[in-house]
Length: 567
Image 1 (cartoon, one colour):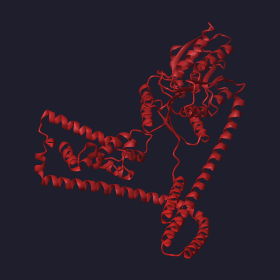
Image 2 (cartoon, helix red, strand yellow):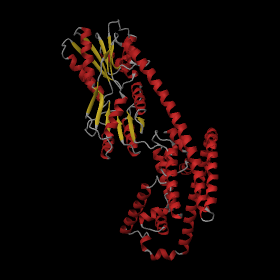
Image 3 (cartoon, one colour):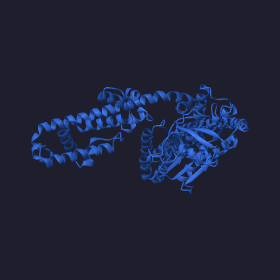
Image 4 (tube, helix red, strand yellow):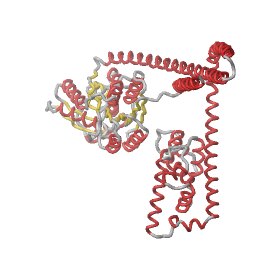
């Protein structure tokens, strides 16, 4: 009977633990997808909103965004950081076609699928590409312009960022379309960087060298065309007959569709985002479904005839999207409330059942069946009372939540004290070893392996030892429980032997070197603007960000916050 009761107790405990973990534990994402954007603008903001909204219908997907602000070197570092953070798939919109080969190649080599979006690179190390057909967009606008001008006219072109695939493809499509009309020609060309200011600069450069008639201005995107139009008006050259064409046709406040509706632009080609389709493509890749190597999104020309209708459609889409966000927010709040209820119920039930099991086991050997039944009846009454307490506990949840912030702060303080005490204990142990070694200096003479005698072979062996020691430390920096004994196990040395060799070679104890290596790694990570100080502290093995800050200031003379502010 006792054996059966023990088995039942273990089974119930297992069920309770599973219930408690499922109620309290944070849901682990099924897929982590990194999104590397080359820049920040209204088009990419729209794409990001669509990607986030698409996760509402794909539970278990976590998105990690970075933006390189048109800096190819920064984007390469951000991709490396995303890859090292443990993503399952990488979505990249490359700044230029030939600058991310190494970074994307590293991800591809680690078996991380790479989905290129909007822009391409000059190699084939990617899983799939999705974006608009930029060549077709340029060709479509070229044919539209030829129709508007009757196949005759002088065109000024403001191209996009030099070296980016959209800029080159839009130019090629537009130029090839005009080849069908011998009396139409591109009389001047300058590159911009997709911003309105660059469109102004490019047009000023063109007007310095070209003083002929301008019948149309074609920009790589709407903003550059608007900037070019402003310069033409400043020079008094716009007689109302010049046509202005751009690309993107965003339905936002200052987007291309609004500019067409207000007659600022003559026409614009829609450059679709379709973040929902992009996320679905990524999920299909992760789930091993067959996907096409290239997927092209459809586009069309926006003119004054359809611009207002498109704006009305966009307003309805925005309204529906806002409603969807509100519904998602309410659903999240409700789910959080249910989770809190489950936690409260689980804690109370666990407490009650453990008491019942322990009482049942203790009573079994000393009381009769009659007494046992009576006690069980009493426990059943207690269970009924506990059900009433559950409702009271629900009312106390709000008080508990308000106390959580205070408790978290206390926990962080306790972590800092514990970590500081751990380091102080490690240092005390090293001091004891130092005293012991000083008392037994003859042991050093007996172990010739640990003496630096200037011999070239010995010097090389010691360098190899130190390199192996530093490599072992570097591989385990993120482990907050890393100890000198752990490194000693890797090096096949006792703590005393490891201390003696490291001290002889570096003048520092292993504890000091481990701390310095963590702080140096943290100093390197401070250059990554996408990481917080807390994230950096945890990555380099500190369980308390405040203790990391103190140790960092002691080593470098400045706080991490000052370093990040000046970066």
